[in-house]
Length: 389
Length: 251
Image (cartoon, rainbow over all chains, first blue to last red; front, side, top):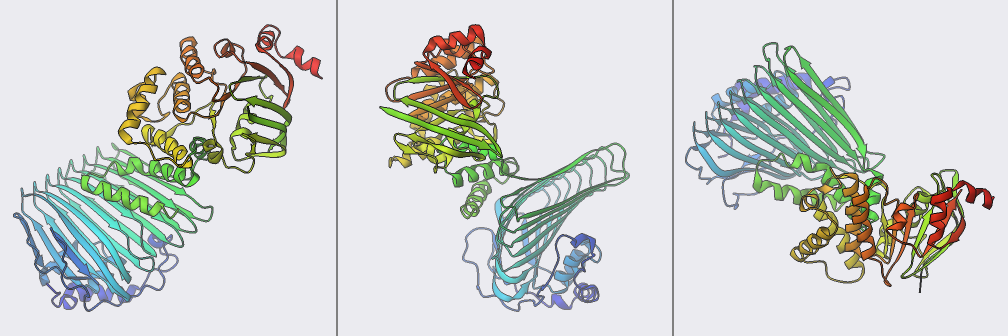
């Protein structure tokens, strides 16, 4: 399943032209005000190093941005296939107009895969999307298009463990009416890797989505998610935890777009920042004029473990309807000295006490994860990160 | 046997000296009470003993089992046998009660070079001790001190003390916020832990706690100094006449 000439499709050519014309965002570009892009290497990898993934189960493995799993047997109700030229145009249509991350990876696509889930299919297998790389001077631009039919059920986890100049995956999910999706992303790229991802979800009526991102890797990472609530009574939870140390930079940017009435969205974001790391949360909830009875909640909290760490939060509500319940909030704080003292006064060592309090800080957000089997590995990843605190 | 020796202890918070030379010796098996009006330095003394940051010792020494603790962090002092029952126990949202208790007990065991507790056996032990102190299973399942009433928090402090078996227990205003029944339960819990193995320092504003936890010695603290020491009758004297006369007499 190596890419056909997707880079020559009209969609890719147009994206590449657009990307060349626009270039990287300047210092005054509003969406990139807290995350400045410098030295972004766009040098799409030509080949993978890992041959085929030996991993058992339902795993799609991209190495250097190229799909290397060539013998994946999709379960009944699911079709996995390479993109056709028409898919490229279809895929691009979901992306926001003239969006840097969209034009970047559509224009430089390294591999593209379509996953279709039939209407009504209840896929119990966990679909793993694994992204690896070992190319310090090249970039990876995998495209994943997931179409989930009405009433289907699906569970998807992304693992990002790349060592590359740039890992820039684009993921589009079209989620049908009454479909249920449990989605998680674990980003643990190496600390010299830039990670720029855009995920777009188009959500039909009564769909139920639980999406969770854990970001603990990369030199600079931007996780941008656009959620289009296109059908009434859809229910979306979009939460994340980011942890950064050294000079790492983590950026969670979300657009929650309530186009229709009666939808619910909730976002919990927790950041832990040490050393001179920087964390960014930009969350915009847009409620269209007709989207009455919208319930949109958003809460971001950042914990600074060092006085040199920085957290920037830009929560925004843009509400055109008049009968909605929306709230947002953002806090930045340190570990509470009285909490630490209480634990230490019981003989618990400072490091362990700090870890207990960081875990406690993340707990309510972790509890929103619906993928049960992921919770343990999430906790383990977080604990492993913390042993470096 | 001498457990705690406080020698000419001076301490300040920021630029303000609060303790102006405290001398106090506690032997194993003894219960000492420190009484004093608000602002006399009672809570400061408890924090200085337990090693809270921000409280600077500017003179004198604190010896536990003959060793100075001044260079020890709060957690080291705790593992060396010190326990502070807080006047205002701290709520720790997200920190599970059992996790917390086990971490504390294991820290102590590791220090002693012993194996960590078996999880099941530990739960059993905690439940048994909790029952004696009127700490419900529900409280044990909750996050530390979160949603506890004032009395429940104090009982939970004593439960921790019972599990950690300190050599020196400092009880800071343990009676505050307790109704009569809670005071009785807490006092019984404390009295059960009295014995030759440990000493206790009971810090209180009022005499009423001392009719439940009867001290061997009573010291009056005022303006950062112990101005008078005596036996339990001194507490009754305070109850009757207040602090003013004692303070005036000392000055």
